[in-house]
Length: 169
Image 1: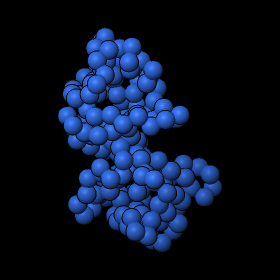
Image 2 (image 1 turned 180 degrees about the vertical axis):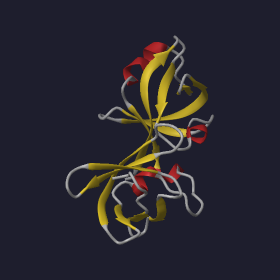
Image 3 (image 1 turned 90 degrees about the horizontal axis):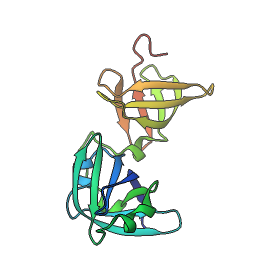
Image 4 (image 1 turned 180 degrees about the horizontal axis):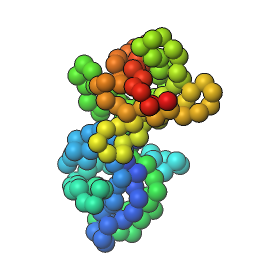
């Protein structure tokens, strides 16, 4: 069975012509919501394949229309569901780029060899992403995704090397 990854959360309908408001959960929203993009609506009971007919960015959300859905009554049931992409449709990334799901679960060590914990999630609050590290003592450490802090990401061995700048802990 194919693996699926979240690309957005359907938060509401938009208008009466079957458009949906989608909160993007992807680094590549322009690509994911492009006309012709193949996605899946995960209702937790079933996976419904859909094809994007149109999408536009509006108030920090994407307003998306799927092929074959032209009425609010056909899409209202999908409010609150996740929009996913199949692993086979993920784009090949260049060196030094990675998907969130590849980083979550990686062990985090300092450039001095100290084991800090594991990447629990990635937040995207604005200027730069923030990696949430679950430390061995149970606390969470927020690490900004900037060159001075994230020194090396080794997806193959699930290890991230960081430099702890003053004030991070």
